[in-house]
Length: 475
Ligand code: C2O
Ligand code: CU
Image 1 (cartoon, rainbow, N blue to C red):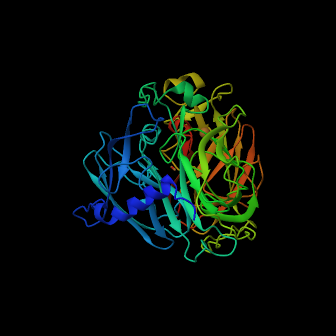
Image 2 (cartoon, protein in one colour):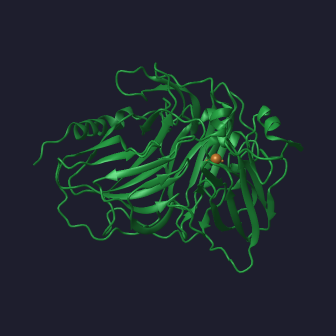
Image 3 (cartoon, rainbow, N blue to C red):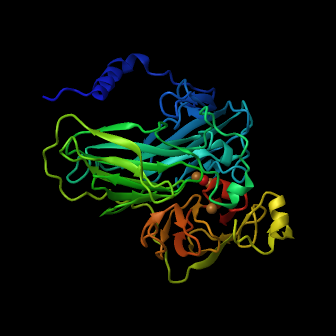
């Protein structure tokens, strides 16, 4: 028998007393369990630094960063009464869920933001299994950057864990990026920094994994684990390397892919990837989660310790996740054709652009806090970009005529990436957020099968706030 590691002991102790000290569930008058948004603190920076004041979600007593993991099985309901204990209005968006429109949380389009000390009842079905997340959708450049984000895991209806070729355990890893001062407080005076917005967005200087800098994760020798990776950063693109762990990609944005060996997992803001890793048998093997911060160098953001009893079974080929079976396939014989032209930002700017019904030059636009446009309109919230009828296939050609990459997210739908453009966008993949590089063109298609008004925006949240935002209507 191997000696139990420190972590095993700690977990053992926690579960021993767990029953007695479970946080009391908090119920509002409506009977729904409460999801409370409030201020709290979190030890984000490495040990030795002070704790950071954050804004966080709580389902029990104390708010945590990331927010508590919400876990349901596909087809089940998620029910929470959001209680706003923040000094600002807020709303919760359930990113990637093909949700009923009124529950989308896309303030101000689908609901008014909830004022301080008021609430809102969210109650919706999660049709598709996969890795999702929830986050603030009001003043999100600030509110998400302060910590208002958490994982939402929708489990498969059929068992996968423990089956032949599957993993025996799964771990959710929420990756985030914080802009901290030397005293570990969040830099607060640059929410609307137009210079950052015109570049890659408000970039942080501290990357955390499940709210901690440089955590140590334990894995048993020979163990096969499913990692659910979520990038909740407001701006940082995360090229990730799972060194020495033979990663296989099994899902993108919640939707299964045919398992494929992968060297770099490229996660744009809001994107998710599920990856199966195989731990080495050798406890001294070099294994780590590495991130390219943008200069091509790899830095370690989490370490793995190989410890505990070894798995000696030889692994079969990585098992695919069960197919959704819920998403209609686009009919490309005569789709409704739409285009999305992205313009703006530093070094290119744009010619004349409409903002609030008025045509402006780049100078006037930026004096209004706008530096980006979709189809010649900055922050086009007055009218839909397009309308389509329920059940119609929409084919969209996206062109990025700026010098910066973008992460384009459609609410209420998942789409098929038709044309490959850059390493991150393999054709045939189904996503809810897609990366598009400078001067790239990308084609996507989806069946508009979810009635309502749906936002479409860049998930680099400073880009969204400075023009890259619009909506479409399905009726
Ligand atoms: Cu995850 Cu409109 O956003
Ligand atoms: Cu963008």
